[in-house]
Image 1 (tube, rainbow, N blue to C red):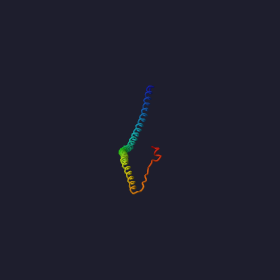
Image 2: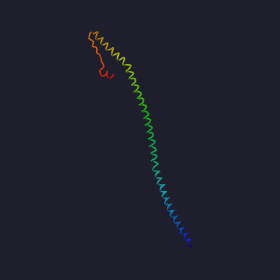
Image 3: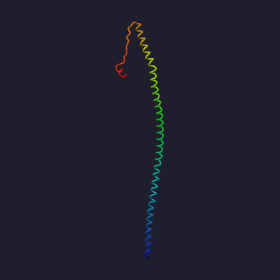
Image 4: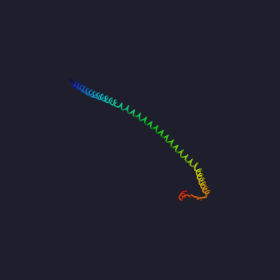
Length: 141
């Protein structure tokens, strides 16, 4: 054998060893990929029920939030109605006070005058009370 033949044989042997090593590495990578596929599939199997439960919980939460929102809107309408009723009652109280204050004052004056007249007719003395505003009331006005 010549040196050239020896070099070609040696190169072929080294290539065969290299290819064998490459095949071993590729087989290991293939085994690792199969194991990884199995793990991914088991992870999917575990997460599918969790995702379904999460979707159900999100749907329930949406229903609860929508119900709470409608209850809040209804409460807002009720509160608005209560405020309107309160304002109307406050206004009607003012109107009643203005409408009834003059006749009540007149009726009280008529009753006091009638009482004085009745006392005079009976012959008793009539004491007239003069009501004066307090000193503090004048300062405020």
